[in-house]
Image (tube, rainbow, N blue to C red; front, side):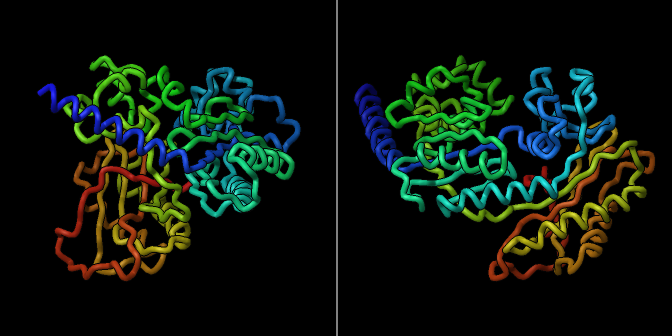
Length: 390
């Protein structure tokens, strides 16, 4: 047993060294715009500068899309109910989101990115990974590239961005948050293990509240606690995720920057001012279908599946999906198919709903599309949407 354990430790050590050496060859930058939506509003209206700005529709069920740093001092955060934000900061200026304007600014930011590299993986309108292992401008270091990008964003768009520079995506994202707002932080390869040691385990991707609670119960509260465990111990406790924990705790992340990532799903949803019975949701379904249809036109693939999402008055989420023999040719046809899924929601005529959503998923290129039958087995229930349309 002792010999086998020793052999395993030697293999773990050699593998970690090899991976670490390989990771040093990569130069990754994560750029994150500071309080993006709120900052655009403050830039475009000088009267808002220095004031607490909250981007959200006002209403009992609205949530905060973005909050300026002046508003954050009062505890206002994104995804918080707007009524809570108003209670925390009654003097805040509430503005409805203008996604058309935000997308235009986001496009301008990405044009700046393209001056430096073609390897850009957007995560949302306000953040992206860049692989600048080789850059177009001939700058000698990734730090210089990140500094140049931030300077150009400020001089041309009058907005600030924070950036993180590291050997991989996992570390670069942590670094970009380190000196927010308007900061730049670099994690050098030789600093990785010591830098990670004291960070809370919740900073690891994939560690949500449930997983974090499970890890805490096992005595794992920091990344350093993971570093102290052998790979075999982590695999025994956490299965396949144990290896992922083992690697990330040592700053090992092989994930490449993927340009032009194709959406796996496209969807939109709406929360109603008052709860509605199922038949009265049809106008909303048509509005959402048009939104999803327009968003899907830029996708290089075809969707195979239509999804309907509903949330009841009691906050129970239901999803129903349909993979038809022929996909819709218009937004109206998409809406009709989504409405047809009402027949599979058997909760009684008195049930009220607070939210509805429409989505397209299971995107495949035309050559990949299999022949579908009208067998009900092609229909399925999907647990959740994964890519929301703004």
